[in-house]
Length: 131
Image (cartoon, one colour):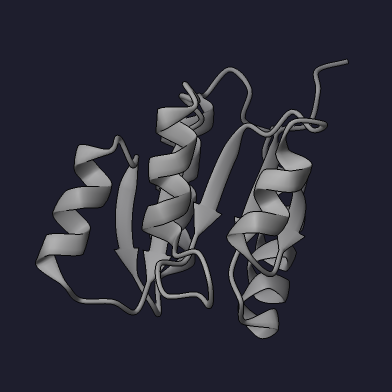
């Protein structure tokens, strides 16, 4: 039986984490949530994550700092930035660092799921639930 893809969600807003995790679960994906970038980094080595969704503006370490640290450490984990930040410079930096996508809040579920499917790959994407 194939492994269920695991999506990590890093956002300091608990409501956002819960909503995104709910979306992952109804789609057939597993999720782990983290309230900060350091919390994710401290746990990341012990988990196999298939994709990361992160906010940009968070206390302490920003999502861009997280992405930069991951890339400096050699990680090629697909990262989707989901943020309310409209700064073109921040967007350019995220994409330069290899972010899969930069999506702005609020995001349509289908837009996010399309990016996740692209990041995870069709072969590993869960089958559509039976009606």
